[in-house]
Length: 270
View 1 (cartoon, one colour):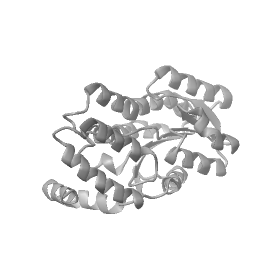
View 2 (tube, helix red, strand yellow):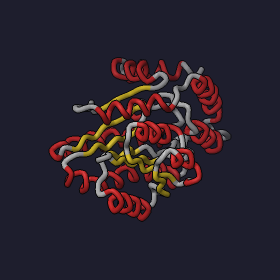
View 3 (cartoon, one colour):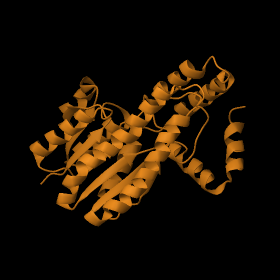
């Protein structure tokens, strides 16, 4: 029996690369995104496309219902959908901050709630939550994005402890710099929100550093391979990380004091 996987945010970047990887591995893959036309290439490879906005409960309920009616099971949920809305904490409208959390945290949590009864009935399943090294450290201008990723880290740790008894694994994937459209969205937002405020000089410095980093960013396939590794592991680790600067950043964050880490980070913005 082929295993069934649902991947959110499958219209681009990590989600699309993961869909291609799991299709190659023989999975029945459902790709979910708001933009159906952006998934034509993975549909041509055999994926099933679902129109799903993870900020819309009806969309999520309908999507899971369709999968269960068609396949009778769901083995893997890859919670990949998310975005970064950058800008100084002082400048970002609270409504926009709430939407950031709605997509990055509550959408992920709701889909997990919806698949868990089916995974418990099977006594098997894997929930893969894609966070970021930005769930372990924070940069200026990314407060609400980092808040969402820190939240997913904590939520996943609790969920992992709760559902292990049912044969279900909860795994965090923490990418470093990856070549996706995420950066353009995040930093265009930063310029729009804070580019003409008291934080404009920090915006300019941050943009310059980000431009350099994007040139060295890793291909999304690096994370797709990591997700495959996590899924196939008999005893998966709680966390996996890969991508540009993920290793050095997580190492320094672990061993440096907050003060030293802050100094190191801000020295890059001079």
